Length: 365
Image 1 (tube, one colour):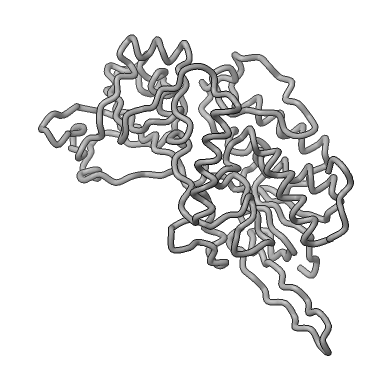
Image 2 (spheres, rainbow, N blue to C red):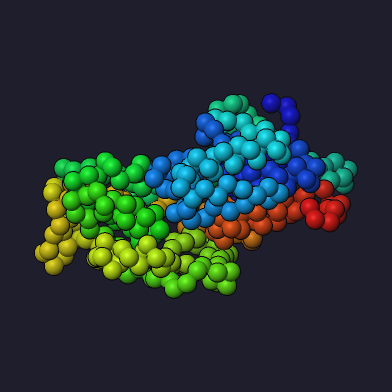
């Protein structure tokens, strides 16, 4: 296509929609892509038994509060409806379903007779065609890259293995012996549901869980974000969010601990045809292994830009990649916090506006 946009936004979850809101206010010409068939970001794929009251990380988008507070409704329905309303309210024309297959750098034209040259463009190859842009906000999150660790014997297991990305509720585990692997909030939420239906549950984690008393307040949030930010500034992978925040001891979690449902065992050494086994010779039989082992950033389409460094991660300066000021990553590193999605989007748009149009922004933009 001959059209060159000021900004392209990849992803229309919480971070992407927030970016669209601030881009609209900044007066920039932008295009948005999302591979999902409808509004809702990753929330549309959450299991239906995860209600609004039990879900963590749902926060208001900038300029329009959620409003819906029926705690008994599935979070996937509520958030999808909210995101769809938001797109309509702020006229965010999201192209969907569109897969962005790659982003590459197109060199600019050199200047002549001492005049500045034409800066390069970023070229997006998508299932809808080729698009060019002066800057990029990537907000693809992690849902598309579930992490499956490997343990010896995993391929010999005669039962069922699934990741929490494919978890759809506890009913299918009725009467089953289930091993849940992982120390995050998704693991504990699924385990507490499954335990009411399963014949037996076993919970294993690589590290002992860190239980956090009281609410997850702003001070704890700032501390967690600071630790993650330090890692990405050094070019290291962001690391586990749970490792930085811990698990909140809600009344439901306390009850599950007291009843023995949340009794953690150390990580097993191998998978057997009939279950799992530890190095000391003990074992547990299982019909199902649920891998609640988290996700990795979905950034494969950015590989042609060679942003990753020797540390295994992408070195960041705020939301901007240190290697290229045109590229901002929302949902990577410290901006992965949903409560900070709006703030991160605002900061990214301000920097991009300053890069593309050095004139000062109006107050409040």
